[in-house]
Image 1 (cartoon, rainbow, N blue to C red):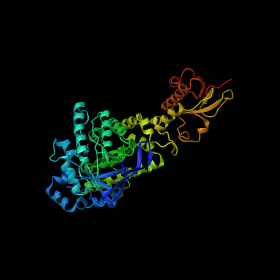
Image 2: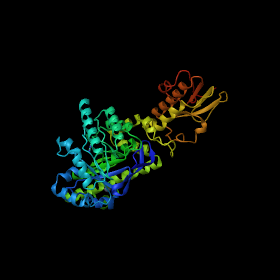
Image 3: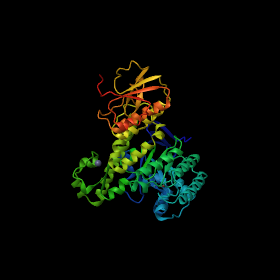
Image 4: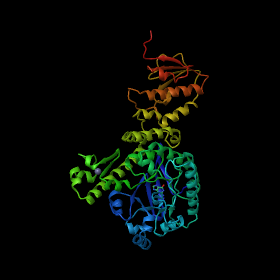
Length: 493
Ligand code: GUN
Ligand code: ZN
């Protein structure tokens, strides 16, 4: 049991939860964004993050504090909260990122964890090894073993009320990620980050990121708070949340601002290319693009960073509202249009529909069919599984729309894309109240035909007739040959 985390609401793999951070005497609502603060660079002050942006938690790097004399001494003397002037919870990273960039760092897990404790961190991180994608399996395994040993060492360090994290590594090997997640779950650490996904995201390899996170999630208990390390672009939050990640950290808001890059929830724009500002945040309502361009480098960086943060926090609020309303997958469906690789990530997520189905609520508002990807949502998968358990009469008529001339059958069920067959009594329950465009697409028909197949194969004793409205031959080929077909669009004599 991870006693510091409570899930209140779920939608697909996503959840709204509460992380209790005892050392900060506070709670953090998840999904949460942790702005990254570089203690040496003051783009937006931590105080402003709390007061203007409502940040409840931030993340900074204890290794940078440790290796800078002035910061180390001040942090040891006054504590991290005073050093940064931040009233909320502070998570610290360990220098693992520096390790992956420069090949070595000069602290051990014991030293840096003790240091994080001494300076008053609320959530601390051991020195895991962020194994990059595509390395040999042997290297991934060896480095994972080292990470796991360090997580075990970290368990024995006196950390009081401070929470600790157990990063999950394993490169691009799903089995290693799942194994790493099981190991991390069995430790006493509180927060479980999925590590070393930054290179995947930098290269737009969202499908593989989904594979990696889905594998980690299989090895984690449902009660584990999951951090997606280094995921800071608002375009991909919906995807990360739908996979079951609860914490995100963003250096992107500041790094992008430095290069005149303007974040939106559907991608990055360059300030140079903007004739209009597609945003209503305080920065964008008080400046034109020309006015932003005319600012000094420092001023422009600050204003862009502020805009980037506004967009980032707004997207998280939108995601939380979508979870509350049961519309997370509709939101993700929109976000997936930002870039073909995001669409690839979304389609990959839908390949894990059975895995997502476990946390997906049985009933929500209304299922909106907004793209052919909708035909692969967990609700469809769940219904298809359930078809195998429903009992069927000796003779059964399945028909699109209203029953017509079905008197000679024991029962008449509806069959609707994308779900397939269901008893009429369920017509008013979720998800069968779904709204679809009248111009159905092929994927929805194929999913319906797949449903017919599942039903018939599970009930070979029933005699099934399908009344369809002009389904194409290729779709009808999915239906087993034992089913009698009636095309309802062909007038009968
Ligand atoms: N920041 C981005 N990726 C990682 C990671 O894999 N481990 C740690 N500790 N920090 C990170
Ligand atoms: Zn703005």
